[in-house]
Image 1: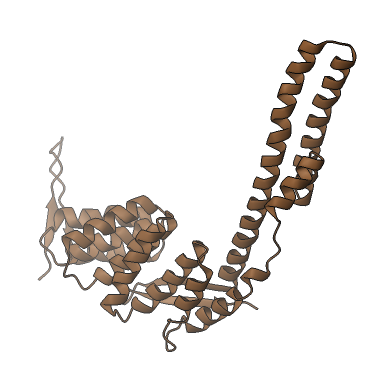
Image 2: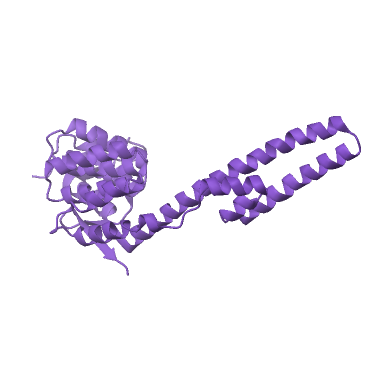
Length: 299
């Protein structure tokens, strides 16, 4: 028998109108909004259900869906807080593996990589048919984000062969073998070039605008110092020389930093290409109220 809630607004100049909320229809409406990707309205409707029907078993599902809605809306901090509370409030829930998985995903998005690995490890230990292999895959992705290439390859190899993610994991693990072949810029070379000729280090790291600025700025200060000394204005010449030493030293440090940034950017672009080559996404089936996996391979 369906449980209903009756809302009676204050009586104004006429008889009160009665609004009836049925539990099943309220939940179905929230689920429909979730399936349509209208996550903020879905959150409101799930919360409405919890408020009017606190004793219903579906309250647990609503709390889970609220966390998932925040995640899909890319509200990472809210999603993390919601799933953390869910795990504490429903420790024996069959949805715990999913809550831990999404908790790990939000931690990864927030760059809390070690925490994410801990959450994924808990999912793997649960041996969940739905989430365990995904957790292995995402653990490998986290190691990849952390620059732990060998650990990432090893973890990708642990994705079960019968998993839908197996092909994707195999491709990425194979591509990671070439990570050391990526073009790199030597920080020491960049610094040496910058010391010999201001701007040369930036030009080496493919930052022509910074190279021009460094060259002109240092050139201008050097020229000014020389002219001042040539005209025997030693005090002003000393001041300009003092500032030029700072610009010259800064040019060297900046060139070294540019080399590090170049190497980091090269690795990040490589990782992004891997993600695009083998993309993974999750969809929600409104009819069964369950999630399913979609992956695509691009060559």
